[in-house]
Amino acid sequence: MTRLVVTRALHAAAVCAVVATSVFVLLQFAPGDPFATSLDGADIPPGVRAEWRARYGFDRPPTERFVRWAGALARGELGYSASRHQTVAAVVSDAVPRTLLLVGVALVIGFAAGVGIAVLQARHHRRWPDRVLGALTLGGVAVPEFLLALLAMTWLGVRWRLFPVAGIGSLGDTAAWPLWEQVADLVWHLALPAIVLAIAVASRVARHQRAALLGVLDEDFIRTARAKGLGEWDVLWRHALPNAIGPVIALLGLALPSLVGGAVLIERIFGWPGMGLTLFDALLARDYPLVLAAVLLATVLAVLARTLTDVIAELVAPRRTREP
Picture (tube, rainbow, N blue to C red):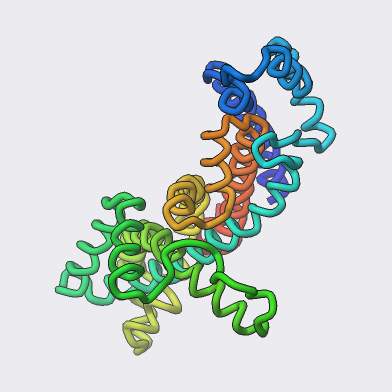
């Protein structure tokens, strides 16, 4: 286990270094800089533009800017966001908890729903519940998340008015509300984007979990459990699922990067003020320090999640897979 953790830590450091370098190089080929929109007007003297670019180091060669940025990053400094007029660390610390809340809720709901659907499919294998749920999960995998978001916004938000379509809270002085009303309002605004992300997670988990369950149902220990008189639901939940859930947990580590990537569009569509919306606005504003910090943070979270899920999958793996 120690060897696994050390190996994953070294791998994570290498991946983060490669991603940070690649993103920095790609941004150098993007036209303009953070001041291209606001300072390139005809009424702006060239000296003002040159002064601002020199103040933030955009007049220096790319190699020198990369060395300065890497050195600052090693000291824990993420730079200054010209579009937000505050440090990148302040922007990130404000947006990251909201994205973690959205992604975390979607991951928990999607994983629980996916496992439940898979168990139900395995219980009714090759019968109509299995076929119907299989078609629904296939649709959940195939339909793009932004299309689901637009459909959910149109029907559940605009037409039926069950959920708000944008924002993280209601308008007005919500700080004066009782705590339970603030929490309820947050959950109400969180529901729609979290459900959209959870559908994609649940669909992928259900399809992989169903295949894993069917793979262990012919094992000897399953026949032994049935011979002891256990009901089919007890066999599935108490014996088959613990021996088939390990690969699905590892799958979550691979699914998290796509979930975080999907959150960029989902946050933009629903106006959820997390890192996805922050990254989108930073790209439009050419706020390169903020873009670099957002991409690097997403990479770190994805690598940490992959490492954590690998460790959990190893711990919950069935004993027979660890025997020599």
